[in-house]
Structure formats: C-alpha cells, structure tokens
Image (tube, rainbow, N blue to C red; front, side, top):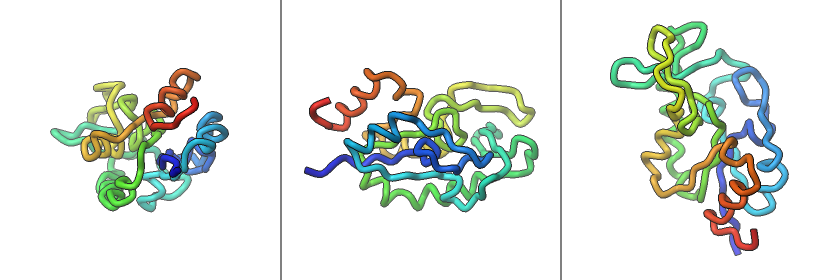
Length: 168
C-alpha cells in the first residue's frame, strides 16, 4: 500500500531555511507524521534562490496586486522570483496528496499572514501567502493545513483521516 505524499514547509522539519537562518521544528510533524506519510520538504524562498539569511519580506497590497516587499527596504521586491519558482512546482504538486504550510509566512501562510499597504498600515491579519494562495486556487481539492491547525491531537487525527490513513 502506498503512503500518502505530503509536502511540508522545510522550516517545520527543522531545516534552517527561514529568513533569519532559523527553523521552526514542529514535534508532531517531525516525529509522528513521517510514520504515516511520505514527507516531501519544500521552501519557496530557498527554492526560488533566495539565500539564508535574507532580508525579511512581507505581503503588501499594491493597487490590485499583492507583492512580497522588503520589511526594511520596500524597494526589495521578490514577487517575480517567487512566482517563477511557483510555476515550476505544478508537476510536483500533482504528485502530492496534501501540503502543510508554515502559518503567518508571506509565502506559505494559510489565512494567517499579515497584509499591509505601501505605507506599512495593516490591512488584514488573515491573508494567505503568495504560494499558499496560488496552490489553493490551482489545486482546490488538495488537502491544505498549517502548523497551527495541527497543534491538538484531535486536529492531527482529523488530518490523517482526511488523508485516508487508517487506524488513527
């Protein structure tokens, strides 16, 4: 029997890929989830060639579009570099059963990322990161979750059941 394939934000697996060179290992994702599924790590920023460490970016609504602009330097715009990487991910995503994103990330946040205007005014605390938003639109049937949604045992069991894992 084949195990479900789940893409997981690399920082949640303990990989030091965050902008500040840190990681955010999630105990259940690192220690328990691999016993049920095949893990496929991903990181949009490092995948797109952005280094570690790198300047922090945030979501900025600029007219009718959302961009990834530098927090300290609004002239830094990594939107197109990230979107180029995103377009290349479609073949991999077609082979995955689910994705687990890092909450509040400007690329991976799932309805949990702050969205600002060009002047730094918070417009919403519940936007989705650029990658998570694209995946949701392009693969509407894919099971999507984030680390915050996998905190409790009930949430973890529900995630595994929705993946079709038996005996949980």
